Structure formats: C-alpha cells, structure tokens
Length: 288
Image 1 (cartoon, one colour):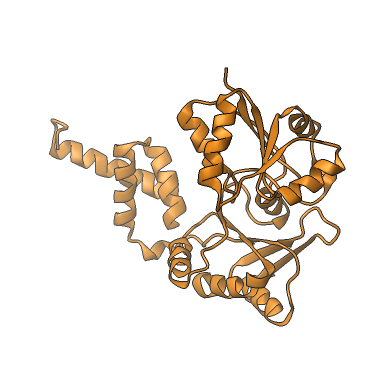
Image 2 (cartoon, rainbow, N blue to C red; image 1 turned 135 degrees about the horizontal axis):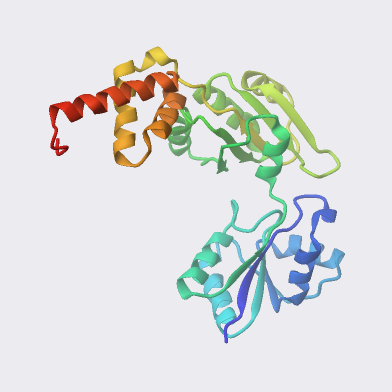
C-alpha cells in the first residue's frame, strides 16, 4: 500500500500563522522534504516537531524526487514544505507533485499563507482578476521579451523580487509599461512589514536613492483599456460575431469585446445581431 505526499503551507514570516492542521500534518508525516532544511529545521524546532528531513530543491530535484517517490510507493507519508508559504508556488515542489500525478500517488494539501495573495489583498489594486509572474528572468533578452508580452495585460500583475535586484526591475517595468499604479509590499507579516503605494515612476525614483531591504512583492496595475477609436467599430463587431459563432452566447461575446475595445456593449450586440441576420438572408441554407 502506498503512502502519500502532503503539501504543507508554512508561515511567510510570523510563526503564529502556522495552522493547527499544518502542525498536525508535520507531526504525523514519516519524513519532511524541505527546500532548505536549515530554514525548516528552525520552524520544526520552534514547534517541537522531530522528524527526519531531506532536502528537495531546484538543483537536486530530479534525483531526490525519485528517492521521495520510492519512499511514498513503499508506504511512507512525506510532508513537503518550502522555505515560506505554499509549496509549488515559485518553488520546485511542483515537480514532485507532477511525479505523483504520473504515478497515480495520492497528494493532499494543507493550505497556508502565500505572499503574492497576501500582497494583492493589501495593495489597494483590483484583485478580482490578476496574473502572478513570480521572479522575472535575469537574462536581458528573456526579461525584455516577457515584459513586452505583458504590456497589454489588463489584469493586475504580481512579481516577486529580491532587494538587490529591485531597482533594476522597477526601472525595467517603467520602461516597458509606462506610468502605472503600483504597490510595493515588503517583509510581509514580519515586524517591519510595509506597503508603499506609488506611481511606478515614483517607485523608480525612491529606490534609485534608497537601498531596499527585505523581500518584495511588486503589484502593478494592469494596462488601461484601449481607446475605442483605436479599433474600428466594424472590426469590433466582427470580433463579437466570431466569438459568438465559436463558443459564446452573443450577449457574453459583446460584453467581452466591449471590455477589450471600449465600445458600448449594446452597440456591439446590435451590430453583431444585424450582421448575423444579413448573413442569414444572403445564405438561407445556413451553410455559408
């Protein structure tokens, strides 16, 4: 009989955020797989958890992942933790979950704190829809290409960044996006927790002159809706009709295209309806 993998969310700063269920999962596991065993050992010592621990991080993930899988197949329970927050989020843990899925091994999750969700909640920026990007590539070409892809992203965008790269990243964001509302959230749940809500240009200026301290989450306002005149009405009506023919009710298609183009939903709906009727008159068989 196989064991299981248990994903255990751990505090991102304040140890009081460890849930009773997470603590029980750590105590009941046969062993703990940790991104950095030194960091996780401090957590376990604080709560009196005494379990064998193995390292599982980016550079040993392939070899160590197979070892962990063999132990689970032999019936052991592995609790997987990251240094802080939820395993698999900007963390190599996703690899071992994928291995478990391939081998049809059970995976349970004990949810806990997550820095990007916590930062989004306190940012003051739209939180209904968002994109989590994690850490940007450090290579110039890859970074520039990714930022260009994100220029037109309408949803709120969230990045992680280390203090020694913060100034460069803010400058790159301003170059790619122009002026946007931004929240810089650092040292979440710790003594020096701080949220700075600034226009992106002011954030660049601030950290050009001031040395950043602590880990940062950068929350950036999404791109504004394009002006209606940038897209001809006829093209917007055609977009609406195409969506409706492919997979959406006409009313929902009109709502989506209205959000993309800035045209009134009613204008798009009535225009697409007329176009549909005209096509039906031209081809009564419905095959055109």
